Image (cartoon, rainbow, N blue to C red; front, top):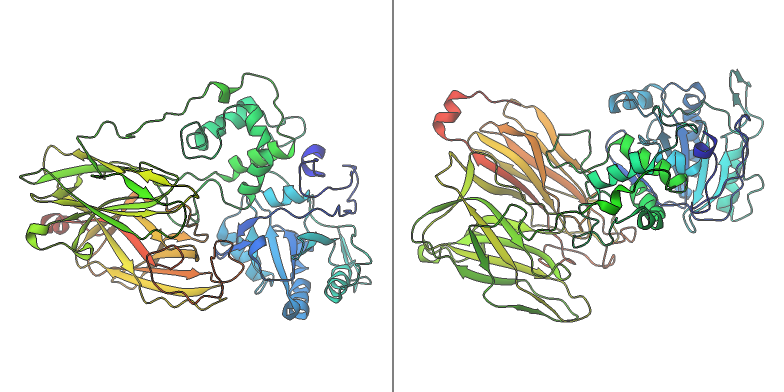
Length: 591
């Protein structure tokens, strides 16, 4: 356990003094290094990211369910938040219990007086591991100007294991916060911590059984990461060998702790999804432990050296029909490129049904997104608003066949309308996007379609960090719901889909606490959802138009609806199939 829990290696952002594993605790000696960014969900499903706080200082206090010392400290921490909160101090509880349900964490916070203090969930114990925390009851105070630790230790000297003074005689954390806010040197930057030992619930988590690269790490990377991080695929670097992965190990640690990778932002507390690409707590812990140990090569063959990810132009096989842009698109080196709309007539003289459509951008570097719609000019449907959705592409999109028993119809005279959004890269680019169509042999029982809940009346106040918006969409008939695609632009912060049923019940179907504009993810339900007639979908969300948002192009600008990325949108896309009358009559709604 010493190599795992005690201290950082040379590559870590902070260095701890060497500690004897037989000692109760040893004081932390700040090295002057910046704390690595991290992001955790709290017990209410809200995201807290260190580098996006507006506080002058953040106190991170480690706790776990059942620890009496931690429980008796909540009231003290609340008092410190009241005392220093208006001066810019945030206090976060970080719960390292790795086997408790969210309901149990909520009960812990409620029963023992956490009050308004957020209880962050470090289920993989990655943040505790990063700081080398061995015991609960430890408070770490971080200044946000330079992201350095200015105090680490106990809240005060009142509580020890099995004993309690009538009152504290030394208030370490309170004094450190006061000195920090006054701009003076912290006279006592460390103190000995007394708390409950933190246990990692895994048989391999011991010094005698270190993580194996060949048996544990490489197979996990192949399973969850290397399909994208391989030659010719979307990842910016290839996981081609142990040597390459080790050279990127510190970066891997950073993106894991900050929740930037893998690109999957659904709160695991709500819903099950067929295309879930997230890491489990155990998988994340395996990678972080291996990185903290120095990313050792160990014994055995290197599975990554022989792994070859498939690189295919058409992931669903050769299409029945490939429709290309009629001319190559020229994209300038710099500037803002307006949306382009290109119509391509289809050769059909009768109706055909499509079971899948795959969009293949001709240039990933400059293509921001592509939406392909179906228009019928001979029927007077020439506007985009009148068009039917066929398929879309944006970074993170993976293509599957439409759900069994469903399809999309292309009638005679159909025209495909390509909506093309390009970004400039600093040099001239070209693109000739294609869409591959896969036909069905016969008409399917259900018509697959994309609906949306949309709010266009957006008014984002300059500097505001949580501007709320919402939109609703109703179901007039019984409908099967297959998945969701939340859509906002660079100021989008979070979005949630809730079902409002005719009987008054309310259910969260998808929560995305950290919306990332770089990944326009489709969340496909593992089990399609039956939405009875009279149901509604409520989409709620928030925008961060402050300087805390690193993606914000201009925090001084009041932002409204618009097509460009520096404008904003609020759309909750949904993929559905309305049930025919005879099928609705036979089936009872299921929720």
